[in-house]
Amino acid sequence: MEMYTPEVMISEEEIALRIEALGQAITRDFDGEELVVICVLKGAFIFCSDLIKKINRPMTLEFISLSSYGEGTQSSGNVRLDMDITCNVEGKNVLIVEDIVDTGLTIKTLMAMLALRGPKDVRLASLLYKPSKLKHKVKIDYLGFEIEDKFVIGYGLDYAGRYRELPYIGVLNAGN
Ligand code: 5GP
Image (cartoon, rainbow, N blue to C red; front, top):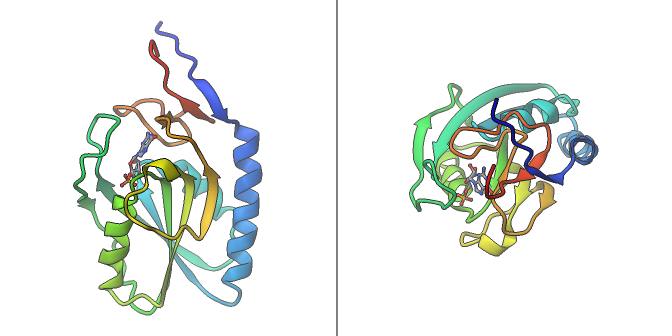
């Protein structure tokens, strides 16, 4: 059987600790409020499922699917809406949960799209942020980790559809 051991960048334990802190901050900031959590598929699905367990507020969960990368490791520069949410966010507090902000194009596009629907507030939780690649300014309200410019995989993030199941954030090396 084929074996692979991508190098660990952020361990399972570090991720869990950080998510606990993010959940506490979100719980505090949305005191007395309800939330619509929007999980950006596919990459944010593990982060989102762990994060919502640490948010002690009434919420509903929605999924949205956007693509900008295709099968490679470089952004294509275009964002396509593959699947939309199923609820009306007008007058609601929205928390977008994203895996990684790289150039910022995906989030900027999503924020602009949601703004047209009249939400009360839109905030962003992103597990990762690569400042060196940022082209479009975005405000990350709840950030997991700032990372260097390496293509990362695991904990929901893929390379050509693979590696999402890794419990840690890893770096794809030649030969994996
Ligand atoms: P942006 O639009 O900010 O350039 O890119 C955001 C999307 O690109 C992320 O949601 C993610 O799907 C993908 N992406 C950016 N950097 C990486 C990376 O290092 N690893 C993986 N697996 N996906 C990435």
